[in-house]
Image 1: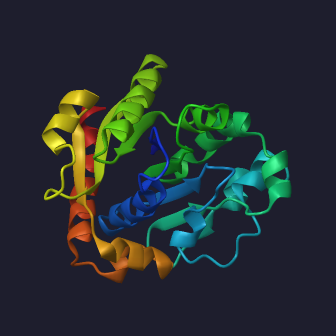
Image 2 (image 1 turned 45 degrees about the vertical axis):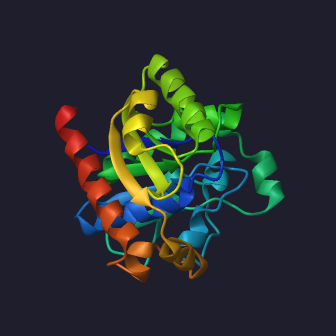
Length: 240
């Protein structure tokens, strides 16, 4: 039986969507069958990281009652990695009700080892609906205090809602800059630190090329850190 993990953050701009694409790829490379779901219904940018051309069946169509969620699962060019994309047009966005996500997402649990939900940032209704669709939560933050503080609040609220908050990923870290260190971030967050992803220009280059950085440059420092983070995520299976 698979794991449904909502990937959440307190603020936009943390690199959450890019991280989900790369974490899905990393889990696939480690032999796990993964489905990334674009649960950010208004932005729907996850598809761009996989270079997927056919997005005629989306999570929006599922929420509009037009198709079953299993019909929205798309293969990608990467082994073990699947995607449920979001629609780009406003008509779909206006008609899809995010409050139905907690009902439809569990229907694919048995199809995959991991289902990763790309949730909107913050605590608005659409974000909460997406995050509550997961059984577990993975938080993404940057080294800035506002990002850490807001993401911590999201984690606390979801923990009170009964969700298992696995920990957080410290993304876009630059040790030579005057940012908050991973150790201090872990003290503030009060959740386990599962990975430190360094700032790496290769990540942006890969995104512009429509592919995960693990494919674009497997040996770059960010790619190595993401693989290690995926291993740490797999280790949390032992705690369930």
